[in-house]
Amino acid sequence: MTATLPLHAPQTQFASVDGCLQVGGIAVTRLAQRVGSTPFYAYDRALLSGRVAFLRANMPSTLGLHYSIKANPMPALVQHMAALVDGLDVASAGELKVALDTGMQPERISFAGPGKRATELSQAIAAGACVHIESFREIDAVARMGDALGVAPRLALRINPDFELKSSGMRMGGGAKPFGIDAEQAPAALRRIAALGMDCPGLHIFSGSQSLKAEAIMEAQTRTFELAVRLAGEAGQRLRRLNLGGGFGIPYFPGEAALALAPIGAHLAEQMEALARVSPDTCCAIELGRYLVGEAGVYVARVIERKVSRGQTFLVTDGGLHHHLAASGNFGQVIRKNYPVVIGNRMDESERETVSVVGPLCTPLDLLAERMALPRAEEGDLVVLFQSGAYGLTASPAAFLSHPAALEVLV
Image 1 (cartoon, rainbow, N blue to C red):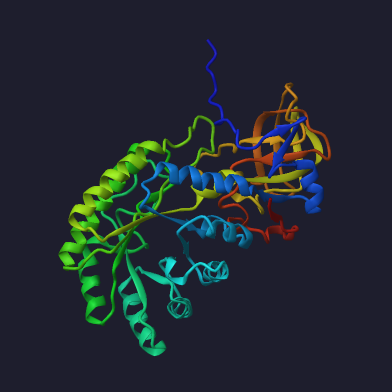
Image 2: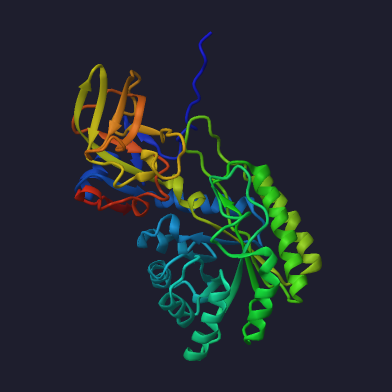
């Protein structure tokens, strides 16, 4: 009996008309002409808006929703997201500028990261953004800068919890971590902030990312609420803001299924109701990046040639790991797995051949799809990689081998 290989989750977010993939209602072939060159990333406005609407429909109405810019900092995309969400989370002065340019109120912008430079802290304080404190060094630094600027810094304390998000792609909490202040040191940190005459009304507790297990996310959220209440009590302070982090994943690889959102929303509603009984003025928020934008983007590269080597067919394209490191398997994968890939202008062809899709770089790491069943593609056809809206261009070594940069469009 032949074993059935797992398949990618269906990619139904983008329509196909007359055999051609549509992005933002535009045929990918026409979009390539409009962009002017390949490779490029394209992000669909309607899908971005739809994902936010879907999330809000499944989450408690009083839960704040923040977009984490690190997932995709393209200015036009961030501008679009800023109109849909309640806040923006940044991790550098560069992202802070993008966030401020949207017109988002500065107090709804938060700045996290374990190694904030003095200039970045000063910029955030001067702008009125909320600095997420991640060390005792930062406590003293923001106090000095606030005094020098004559501005009361807006602060939250980022906690390294004593637990992690199970089944997550990246574990941001539990054990020794460069992120945040260890939970057991948090009361001392809050007392130090108060002794310096500053107010720290909020906590930020982020335990992991890219989880497709609703049960694991709910367990982490329960422990997050418990930890936040305990820490506020130990410090003798009111908890006015609680950032729960994120952790919501999207399916990339064969055998993965979409995250079940409804039970998470119901669970959050219960947790928030319980919190309101002991801390009625606490405002809760989640910060999401990949979940909001990842499935709304595609990466498009053009086939330069078909090449057969000892019986194996390669589609050599003008795109590669220098533009899309994650799809090459070199951005966190332990065992390389394929992203969902199609030939964008041959969507209605049923016959398949087994091919590998590679880029133009002279390294065996430049692999976009390995031995996938795809319609026969010829020179000039368009290879499209789904799930490419997050951690794409800016998470890739664009200068590697000095090839041209990929373009980005929001359609």
